[in-house]
Every structure is written in structure tokens, then in C-alpha cells.
Length: 196
Length: 264
Picture (cartoon, rainbow over the protein chains, first blue to last red):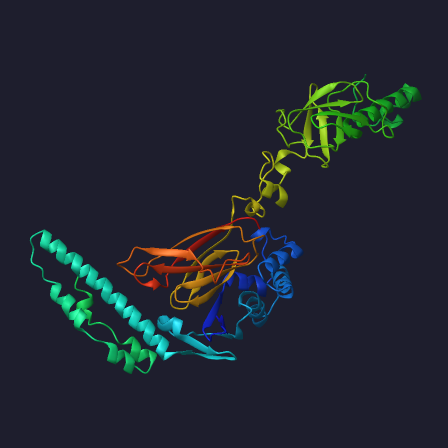
């Protein structure tokens, strides 16, 4: 299903993923019998959205569209975007495909819309944090296993892995990665990740 | 009184030999029987549980006795709060029972609603509307105190105990709603951060939410689903959620489940 993208004031990106059911209601005959009691008091429903910070004209169009249905796909995305995209966002577009989610928090976009790009400094920061967390987790597991081995009189065979992990410096590779794909390739050696 | 024969007498079916007076008397018996079994409107209805009323004198003469099979249409002035008696034209107070002959429970005889009652020889019974036809309105569902009204599927969700919205969505890859009720969309705000947008809003922000999320890190069971940070607060029409683990911070999840209850 297509989604709605918009740019926040700091150029980060939000993406609205519509419910297929609700898109169906909007583009066909409105809310079906039984769903939400079907009988909708328009003014009351609008008032509740207004209390939630939605502009009245937007809320009214939304509720009327839900009641009556009959919108084109484009109109349905438009009323949904009006309701669900925060008011301080700009560059609202409907798109088919999103970039890989690996560097989601590094997605940036022009305030006027256009394609989603990955901000490399932010992506490097995200990737470095992930790698640090990964290493932390594996070292903790190895140390726990080592203690268990000690207490049960077995040979401590994993401590060298900890030393190896601590000795690896990925900073150059991370700094030199020029694309998201290249950055994503920077990983700890597989044989050290699966030691426990 | 001679019983009605359920066939209006005419010279043809009785023959001319019985005389006009006999025919007239038999017609009168038929007419009286029709009156007795048709519903007579009651006026001056007063009281809550001890109800007094009069027959509409523009339609029939005042009652002198109750008779089995007599029917009356009555609009109670108040909804009953316990068992009920009815006294028409001061003939005497008689218990009013439900269609099955059981004592009325509180709220069964509803103010403003027209009821048809019938004398069964001992008591009055409400014969219309029967129990099975009374569906609770939205307001009655929200009040949630009636012990006699029925709940129909289209109004079930108005009760305070009912969930007003629920959702299960996948927050990884291209996020997508797997199944939902009363949720129009999800807004992806970043890694492990989404906003659930309702189709119809709550009446205020004072509603309750609950949820769980599937951890995506195999060695970390400390998966936490929380409502948004102070900068992104819930509103009556949208609820922010974030998923994080103790060791990695914000993290996407392949299965986020959330439920919402409160007044809509």
C-alpha cells in the first residue's frame, strides 16, 4: 500500500501508513453497518477531533468522508494526510517505496518535498551506536559464560574472544563509508558474534 | 353476557325469522367484544411504581371492572424503580408483570415509551414492547445500568467496558497495519516510534491504553512499549507509542499490539 511522507521542521521524515480497511471505507460506501455503530453524529465527532488539536474544516471533511465514502484514491490519501500529518510538517507526498529502514533516523528530506535521502553523519552515528551495543551484549554474554565455566571447573575458552573484540577498531572504516550500503557492510567479524 | 360468535350477524346468516331486535343485540355483543379486546388509550398517567390512570373518556366510558383480555396503551410518566401496580379509573391496584408474568425489575417500564398492557385475569402484563425488542441506545449503553435492555452488535462498543480501538502492526521494514479497529493509520516517526491515529476520536485525553511489543533482539527480553515522550503527548485523536529495550534504546518491532478504552 502507498504511504504518505512529510518533512518535519528539522528535515527529518514522518511516514503515515493508512489502514487498508479505512481506505476501503473512504473510497467505497463509507463506514459499513455495525462498524463504530455506523450512525455517526457529525458535530460530536468533529468536536472531539477539534479538542485533539485538529482544525475544524479538516475534521469535518474527514468525518463526512467516512460517512459517505465515494472518494477517489487520491482524495482519500489527501483527507488522511490532512488529518494525520502534524500541522508543522511540509512537503506532503504520496509515495510507493521507502528507502531501507536500517538508517531510519538519518532520513532527511527537503522542506518542499522530494526524495528521502540518508544523512551520512547521522547514519554513521546510528551505525556506531548499534555496533557498540552489539559488542557490549556479546561481551556480557561471554563474561557470564566464563564465570559459569570457572564455577563449574571447566576450561575458560572464550576470554580471548573478548580481547579480540575489544581490540578491533572500526572507526576508520565507518568514517570512510560514503554510502548507506557501504556503511551497512561494516560489521564485527561473524565468528566473534556467534561464540556463545 | 353471551359470548361473541366472531361473525357479524346479518339477516342472511341468521335468517329474517329471528327479528331485527335479535340481530341488533347480536351485533351489539360483537361490537362490545371488539371494544373489550382492542387497546384503549389511558390518560392522566401518574406515579412511578404505584401508577394511576384513566381510560380516555372520549373513546370509552369509565371502567367498572377489569376483564381478562382487556388491553390498554399506556405511556408511563416515570421509569419504574421497583415492582409496579396499575390502578385504572380507581377500579383497584393490580400488579404489572412482564410478558412472562414475572415481577418487573427496575427500569423495565420506561418513561415516555408507549406500552401495551393486557389483563390476564389476575394481573396486568406488558405485552408490547416485549423484552426481545428492546435494544439499548448509545446513551443507555454508556450509562450501562439497565438490566433489561438488549445489546446489539452496532452499539456494543459504546459500553464503558468495551475497547474503543485496537491495533496490531508491524513496525519493521515498511511498517504496515496487520489488523485494527477504529485506527485509521500509523505514523512512523523514526526508529521505534509511531503514532496510532484513530478513525473516530475519544471525547478527551482521559482514556486508557495498554500494549505489548515483540522484542527484535534475541538476547534481550527487556522489551518495553511506552507512550510518547513529553514532547509527543497523546491527544483525543492520536496516541504515540515507542518501543525500546534496556540495552539498545529505541528499536523497531515486528509486532506491536495496543488496545484503547474510554469514552468516545
